[in-house]
Length: 188
View 1 (cartoon, rainbow, N blue to C red):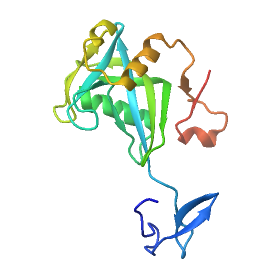
View 2 (view 1 turned 135 degrees about the vertical axis):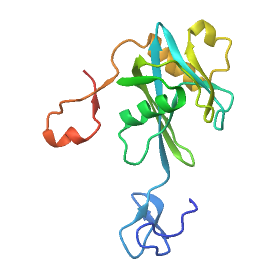
View 3 (view 1 turned 45 degrees about the vertical axis):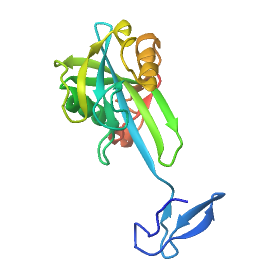
């Protein structure tokens, strides 16, 4: 059971109760239930001239590994904005989301969901930010064979270069107008 002891809504001490068939920490004074800890990460496959944009991580996790640019979504930011921001911050490259091409689900102490986007290169010359990454560039599959590329990145690059069509595309005109405020993605 996680080390969460007090209600985030009212501050009362949490108790353990069975909710939905699981023991969960819940508040005896209000309706708050601690459902767990989650993180949503995003990664970008930006392809230019059959080369993929990669960065070398300067910090943990993954220090020293070459990965796709990426990071975590912000609380009040749609995921397409998160990944465009991360690519720009880490590399100085501007790119826009074309489709979602992969999803990794890793239940753990913090349940980690990682969404991979195919992005269209707009402009910019790759340069590392010098904080999160200390290397950046477009690399071919042949160049990647001699680099310390993270396993998840190898998977992402394979999808981007060999996966074919069929990713989830942004639904810019949802069937209901009330849904236009959300980031919706769907098959063709």
